[in-house]
Image 1 (cartoon, rainbow, N blue to C red):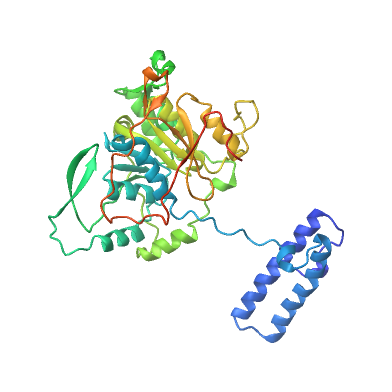
Image 2: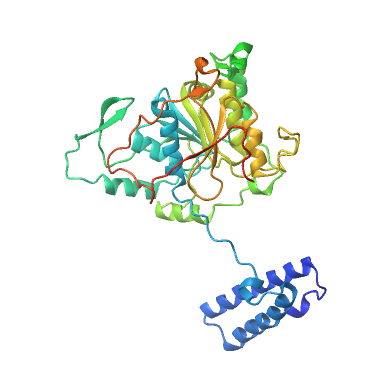
Length: 405
């Protein structure tokens, strides 16, 4: 777009059009220089910039192009967010994570959190995420390099679990968490939860996952085979692999998209839901509320770090004050209002959306309904995982406190 084609009237829309045209011309000039284009083409592109900049400065009153044309925001520093969230889970739930069938990691993304829990803490994990494959090649190479020691293969590593010392085999070959390529939603679990015991709900312990009926298994089996409903929000409509996923395919030597893992049967899903120790989600997007609803209905501990609100997809949501849930802070308060006597908030030490909404693992009647939790009783294997640059500290928020939008 040439500068002469832009509107000349001074309003907000015109300013945005000028700024967009400036960024486009700036990118074109950089591409021409990188491609060693002709001097004429480069001069033409530079002239467009010179023509646009005075107009933008006049509209904004800025003294330089850097102030007049907003640049892309810097990248949020949250590379260690999975490790920090894992440490929070260990500190909050302790040995309870390793009980039963282990943790359900809903919308687990590339599988970083699950990989670390499984290989560094020996906590069994099942990833429920619709993507066809987990991206673990980089983590596996790092794990193998750290564990490449001259010791015999049968050497063991002592790990403390609940105060007891357990010997686990030390191997340079990491394990991959179980992965089910399933879109988490209410239809997968609601037929399996028996909420007939109203007293359980009043006590804040949720319902019970009992032996399912044939009709319930058939309903869940059909939901497993069906594609999830299309969302109105374009954010949930994937148009292809992201650049990071494309790089991951190249690193893993994939010449074509990987085949998705086999779907679980309804009985396998029922067993995982009944025997899981906790349900977690790091930025699980649209699966956030279904995670909380399932955990409360089934009496399972949960911890989620909400990210996107998807107000367009869920217009009927209303907060405790009756206002629409259209901001991150309102979404956090909306989730906590589902069971304020059980749900707590904490702030994790990384940038971006870092408020964790979690339920306390046990209810102590002697404290008037306050929850008591066992602190860290799982310990990482020595020298087995990358630590954040500084020791993470978790800031707990009061139950009645408002989360920042």
